[in-house]
Length: 232
Image (cartoon, rainbow, N blue to C red; front, side, top):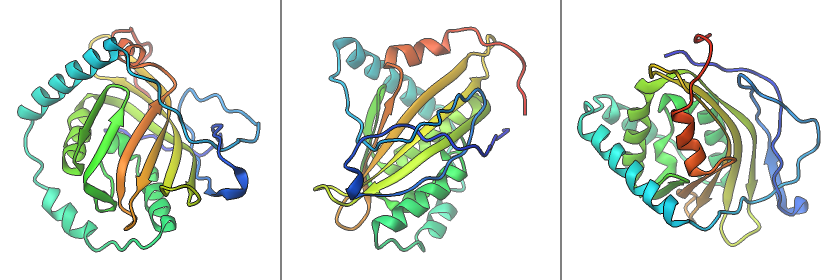
């Protein structure tokens, strides 16, 4: 698989109380990116109430994911990966932020390579199309998608931490671009944010994505003809 890593700064607007935010911005660029020069505010993303159509879509996506998982080979490297990650020590929000930043640099959304040890075993994972529990299941779901990606990239626009609210968390904003290996070669283009909520032991207990498109619009991109040939 080709991986694209670029280096341009383009922070995405957020909103929190600036005096209470300790932030580190680690930015990279992706193909087709339009950047803004305005200074960002910081905010925790809000989530829209689910419609009946969205609930049906989530059921359909869960079903397709389960079918892919049943017919996919087991990952032989998972035990070795786990042994290495068990050596990681996390004792603060800063440690979590540093590790997440490294995972974004490794493009974990499109490579499947992430530090699972910083997640609770029963962590909840959410995006507009699916919700489930379990870090091992999340790892398998990521790897299920890898064979379908063509020339993928994930650009980290900003990453911040908050320790002032009842729940400590890290908030990352990013830009995803990838073609899919389908005959009509659709382009998936999503700008989004992920909130990583932490427990008292600094384990991630909730990984929730918010997108700039609806679930239906995101699925609709799969059925839209792409253009051009894959580039490196």
